[in-house]
Amino acid sequence: MKKILITGANGQLGTELRHMLDGRGITYRATDTKELDITDAQAVNAYFADYKPDIVYHCAAYTAVDKAEDEGKEIDELVNAKGTENMAKAAGANGATLIYISTDYVFDGDSNELYTVDHKPAPRNEYGRTKYEGEQAVQKYAKKYYIIRTSWVFGEYGHNFVYTMLNLAKTHDKLTVVNDQFGRPSWTKTLAEFMLFAVDQNLEYGIYHLSNENSCNWYEFAKEILKDTNTEVVPVTSAEYPQKAWRPRHSILDLSKTEATGFKMQTWQDALAEFMAQISKK
Image 1 (cartoon, one colour):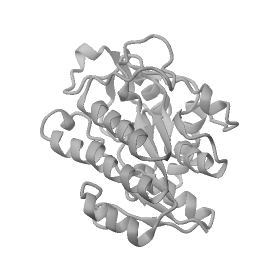
Image 2 (tube, rainbow, N blue to C red; image 1 turned 180 degrees about the vertical axis):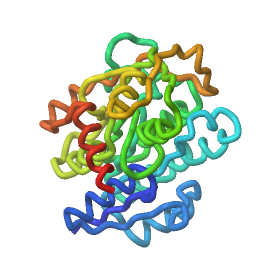
Image 3 (cartoon, one colour; image 1 turned 60 degrees about the vertical axis):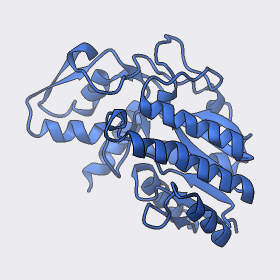
């Protein structure tokens, strides 16, 4: 039986992946910062030497996009760039398959076309830059790898836009949400399923794009989330809602390479409906 390692195992995606593996009766070793500091190369090498993983689901990441511009800049660099480089080097040296989760933020977000896996990255904020540096490290040092770019992630375990909207709706009659930033929402369940699918099906190594089908802007996403509440959602422009980190105006990922593998993706509307039904039972 192959040995599986998960980094960032207590995060939004790592937790989803753990539950999925548990449901399939698959054993693994789960780590977070307490068990494995990915920014410490010696610690990473020692961990690989001891455990000898065959498959590494690298979910650990610094995702505070706005903080990455200033107060979180150093930890963003350490985790997303240096930490991923350490993992890639160890995976390459030990012959392990590395699955790295990246982001639509590696692109400039200015194109009105879909971003294909071959589109040239040009990140315009610190988070996107360090995630792209992580991609480059994986390609340079890991012999067997899957880079999976995703966007607008939501799920049961952790902080995300869906929970933010639902919580705000409890105390607000009206919410303003930007309507000039377009992308694809991605359910952590769909993402975790594809991570396992890529390994199980022995897909060709390389870069893949994964989200749910269809696209929208944040206002449309919020409207769908809150459609069964009494909260009014009002569209505003990005200029009316300034943020520290630059946000892509149009970063819709092209899913054709992933679709060609036979992997089925729900629309984001169906994924959201299933997710909402799931958390309503909690």
